[in-house]
Amino acid sequence: MKLTKVGKVVTLLLCICSFWCPAQSTFISNSENRTYTNLNGKWEYILDPYETGGMGGRAIFENYKTKDKTDRVEYGFTKGRTLYVPGGWNTQKPELLYYEASIWYRKTFDKPNVSPNKRYFVYVGAANQTATVTFNGKVLGKHEGGYTPFSFEVTDLIRDKENFLIIGVSNKRDSDDIPAKVHDWYNHGGITRDVKLIEVPQTFINNYFLSLNKSTLLSKTKRIDAKIELTGNSLPEKAQISIPELNIKQEINTNSKSSIDFTVDVKNLELWSPETPKLYTVTIEAGEDIITDKIGFRTIETKGKEILLNGKPIFLKGICLHDENPLTKNRANTIEDAQLVLGWAQELGCNFIRLAHYPHQEKLVRLADKLGILLWEELPLYWGIQWENPEVLKKAKAQYAELINRDYNRASTIIWSIANETAPIPSRNEFLSELAEFVRSKDQTRLISAAIKKDQELDGHPDSVYTYNDPLIETLDILSINEYLGWYGGLPDESRKKSFTSGFEKPIIISEFGGGALQGFHGDKLTRWSEEFQEYQYKESIAMFDKIDGMVGMTPWILVDFMSPLRQLPGIQDGWNRKGLISEKGIKKKAFFVLKEYYDKK
Image 1 (cartoon, rainbow, N blue to C red):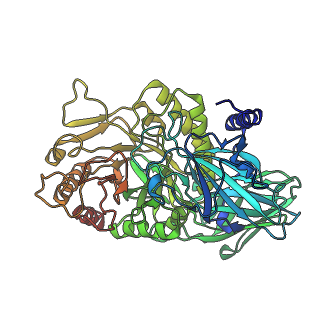
Image 2 (image 1 turned 60 degrees about the vertical axis):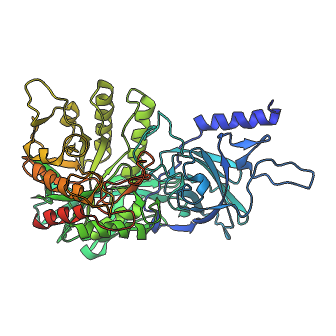
């Protein structure tokens, strides 16, 4: 079939857009404490399985309506056909269970009393994997990365009545994406986190960064290093920061600059820690804009083979976690979702969680601040990454910049991880070393790690010794190890014979270990998939790891069973990774109590 002239133009425009549309216009942090209109709820949708962006010569985002009964529209939105936002589309409709392509969402809304003195931004907490955002018929831009927030300005487009926001989302897995084509978790497609229309003054504070200077940790008067970023055409000469509880009210000379670095001296500062997760109300004012946040202050560093929190050694009693509510089978997106899994982690005795394998919802990170739970955050630099592709490196830097911008002020986050189970080859080593340098340039207040594979067996190294000589370790602050002896290779009783060695004077975290068990299936300790096998494996693995010199924490895999299309063993997995200590129904397995007992003694 030949395309009409109009069809060719539309197709060309869509193709051009896919390459040249800008990424987000302005990063806006702390969306919860801005003035906004909530755009969550039911959105109309239309499938786009061939990802054409339109049909019959018209693009979807034009939102074309028929003029009369003779007019032809072959492809458009139908009232009553809806999906909930936020939420993955896969489990909302049976026919979308394994759907991997594009869906276009439409939200229509009024915005009475649009002010000429305000600016308006469409803010999306996350959309997996690639989102094309349009507003009132104009393409605003495209965002890549399924787990970080983005925004586009609509000030010149918004009107009092009948606004239409149309967002096309594709969860298609491509080899030059992050993550790449194959990963061991469920590919929840769609707009998976909150959507808001944020309203700000003409000049506003788009971001700010506050951290405790560790050189003043032992001083009576401590120093907070701070930076604020302003956006607007008329920048103020002065700004102000207030921390009422510390009697701080400090004026800042901005000299009409968009980025201002300054320091704040404080006395009687109570440090944030898992035992005392103290948060201070901080208010920043610039021009007509005022933004308030709850921020804790602490330091994190390494010394030899120790991790020091506020200058004191800490053992990280951790667990791994996916950003999923197993009870609803949905991508986590509510405070209730966060309370569920963090409650389980606290019951286990954890003071630390590895947020695998991608950025989790901001609500969880903020709740961890309140509860005193330390966090490891990471990007899905996982299997099959195109290390030699410079465009993939650009994507990694962009996603990490968005994550750091979002979570810099969260005291709970102490580790940025740059990779998981990647083999050392020259292109990978160069890629990750450059990424580590980039992350440090954005944030020098946290530690950097990566989950490392052990060396292949070498001549002169007996089977009982595992060695680690990955050149990437030199770049890292912490050596993190994934080791599944007893599950992938051998039986649990081989664990106590093993020892671990590396040539690095660095702390070690056991970032993954464990094995699968179907909750409610019982047998003896050598019966695979039984709770008894998993229990036995945890006992032997913990005994093995506890002997490692410099082992300062562990995050076994994983807190709760999670969805994964890779795991299809009938009657056992049925689309679930069964390595959780808790089932998808919320029932604890026997190994849960083995780990809890170990943590209770630490």
